[in-house]
Each structure stands twice: as C-alpha cells, then as structure tokens.
Length: 335
Picture 1 (cartoon, one colour):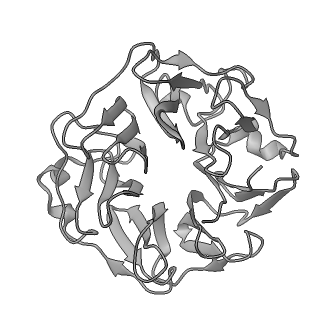
Picture 2 (cartoon, one colour):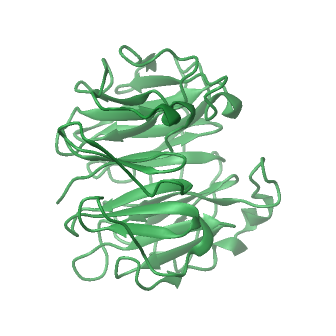
C-alpha cells in the first residue's frame, strides 16, 4: 500500500503501509494537502489562519512554507506536472479568492491577478458567508503545460491557458459549485467535476459540458477520482445536500461508480452505513492501478477493484475523529 496523507478538520494524518498512523499539525484547521512527487517527495498542507506547511521527510516534520500566508485562510493547494526547471509550480488559493504560485516550493510567491475582474466575479458568493468566496480547487492540466483550471466556491469554474497570466470565465452549462475537479493524463481535455450542483464532464477542455445523471440518486457531490488506467471509470462521493455532508450528526453519504457511458451504481459494499458517515474524500493510487482510498469520520477504507468492494484499513482511529470530515486525501507517490 502507498503511504497516505489525509487532511482532517484539525490535523494531518500520515498513514504508512504497515498501518502506522501519525498525527501532525494537531490543532490547526487543515483545509488541503498536496504532494510534489519529484521532491523526495515533498508534502504540503494548507490551513485556515496558520499558513502553508511542508515536509521533506515523509510527513514526520513540518515547517512553514514562507510567511506570506501567515494569518490567511488557505483553501486549496496543487502542484503542476510541469514548471520551472525540474520541479512543478506550487499553487495556493485563499479566501477571499486569490491565487498564488511558487517556483521554489513555497519560499517565494507571486500572485496571479486578473481573474477577480472576470464578468462572473460579481456573482461569486459562499452561502454560509455570503459576503465572501474562495478558491475551492486548483487543477493544473497534466497534458497541457500552463493550462490551469480553478474552481471558485461558489460561482464559477474558470481557466487559464498561460499559467495564470490571463483568464477565461465560466462557459455555458459548466458547473457552478465545483468541489473537486479531476483530469486524466491519458484523456487530454477530459474534465470531471464533482459539484454542489451535480456531476459534470467535459471532453474538450471545458468548452462544453454534459451531466450524466442516470442512477445518481443524490445530487450534492464532493469527491471525484478516476481510474489511472481507464478514464471511463469514475467514482464520486455524494450526499443529499450540504447539511448532510460534513457534520457527523445527521450525516448521510454515499459513493457511486460509473463505467463507460453506463448508469451510476452505488459502490458502498464494505463502507460504513450511509447515516452518520460524513462524505468521503477519494484518492486513486497511480502505483497500484485499481486501488482507491476513501476517508471519512469512520476511518480510511480501501478498494482493490476500484470501488466494487471496500475494506477498512487496520489502523488505530482516534475517537475524536469520529465527529470530523476528511477535507482531502492524497497518495504519497514518487515519479
């Protein structure tokens, strides 16, 4: 099993292949995690108010990645497949919505301005805090250098073709409230959006969109991941609505699976009961194709057949995590 990095509400979890569980950054409001596989690998964690943290020893020690974000709410992180030299760009998004990138792993940063002037910007609003909005997801394109997709919660999925120097606004029929966006290196131009307003797919880099919904009984989607060797096989995590997704009291969540152009089917065999389970964060392993992970308040679960059946990882799950939701999970893989 590949090591896992999981962002819970108040800490980062590092799960080793032998089942050892290490808790780091305890007491911090962790929002996002990312991995740069070419830096040993280097791990990143974004927080609300405590900046960005990084680790170069597999997650055992964490240090601040510069001082720019100290006191800011970091809401999204990503590392690009291409960038300056032999490393990728590190991207960071914040609330209020702003986007930054670093060429040196977080020591220095430049702000990518301009997208706040897009026509749709006046409509962006995060309903629980309607006077603001934030960058929810950042997705560098693995197949097209300098193409970048950014999800604003809530209001738009926007894109740049030049690394963030200029921006294009949301297109007709695109998702309004993307929570997670997936791309596939074997399917250039293919986008998969798990959004508060449903599931969306594009096959032309976001120009046009479809909404395959047959069999999908719950329309509030949070997580999405795609089989590394089959861009037609997709998993999503879902809930009846936001009030059922994140708080363990009253939670109700599901995982769905779809192949080719077929119907969505529930993929919960081996997962905990839907009621009382917060919506799952999902991550597929590139090193072990077919292996996928789901993290929620009940623990971390794995499937070797991409969601057909699941089993709980045999790790010691702290009691205090039973009331939390997992904001993100990534596989710590190199190369």
